[in-house]
Length: 256
Image 1 (cartoon, rainbow, N blue to C red):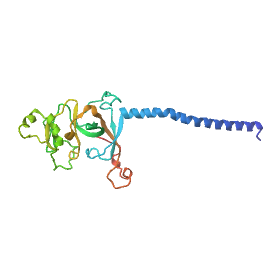
Image 2: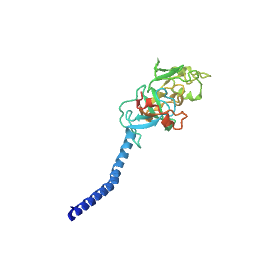
Image 3: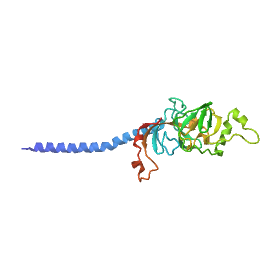
Image 4: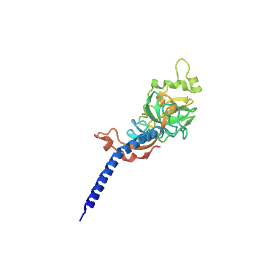
């Protein structure tokens, strides 16, 4: 049989329990308010100095990267840019020939491109019948694909190369009628100037790269692709291609 003391004790315990629950409920928003700024700061720091996400919009890097790939870019390898400053953090290493580079497009720095590094400062480059020659050595590039190898149009876009021709090429390009007639698959030899890089797409017949608009200042480097974290076929006729056109075999694959 319960006494009045038992009743009062139970009522007091119930009241204390409700009070604790209210205090916990009130503390939760404040706890989130304390954690949220730290989480935002951490995300901003990671995006600025470590990794950043990019989408591959075109087929210029097939077979290495496909249109519809979403990649994480390693920003610390070449030294991340200090915000609101032209300075950069110390690089883990300098760009090496064959590296994949993410950079701001010199023509429009608001756009970002990804291409393969094929020429560093001082390198002499040319292309003969679509085959790249570096420092007089023809290269065997296993990662290159050719989707339109029989088309080699002449265009004025390549005329910028005249200012970087080797002395031998300049000597041949004199007289009443210029001899140097660069095209997509036949150009050079040109010399890469200091503090600049020459880049090409792996899909050599379908890539807007250094052949057309020139060298990349090394100050525009942003990093190197690291991993494909998502991928889907963008030209599928499905209503939700990001869900039904997923390339499952590419998810989590390292970029080489």
